[in-house]
Length: 242
Image 1 (cartoon, rainbow, N blue to C red):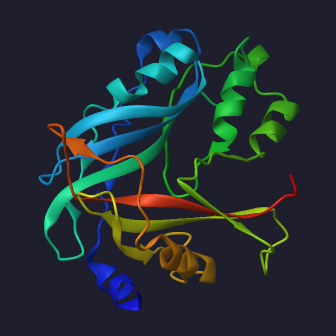
Image 2 (cartoon, rainbow, N blue to C red):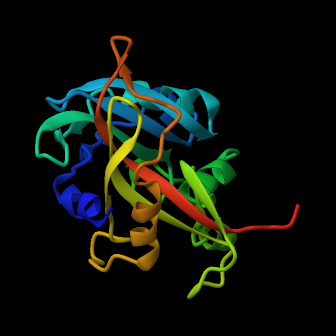
């Protein structure tokens, strides 16, 4: 098992460069804000095959258009544990928001700005001219300081306790290789932030526990399962009595 984890050092999920150049003009005029957790499938050349919306927030119309708005997003190639280009699955949390705009939909914007999916959040900021009587109120600015975490765990492990944490759960992201039988064959733990190179014991434990696991949703291309790499969101949660 330790060899499989060590060998996974070559694993690379496609890095995304989202299209953040333009805010939809119709949504800008209507002061609409939205966000979506989306999942891309990328071919071995780094080209986008598909985009799926996993969760949506804010303006329904704008949120449902975010996949379409990210058609020009760019991706690096995915690499297997053996160093070969392969298929990749990558998630991103894309927010379209107009900050500091006092409008009948201002609360919507504040709510969107407060949403964060750690490690995968990208923002497209809309700009509008603000009249003096529409400057943000102190309460609006205070609301923007609040952060709400968006999470969609792929795997949850029930535990009796979480040493070193006062929370009820801990989420870790790991990079895995999944073969054409939907089995996790390699895993590498990730540091919690780009600036933090320390890998937590929970991330290491996540890899140790997912190696060999069968994933129920196989990636199929042309109706056949294919090997691919992706991030897995792993949650350790204190088990509650039912």
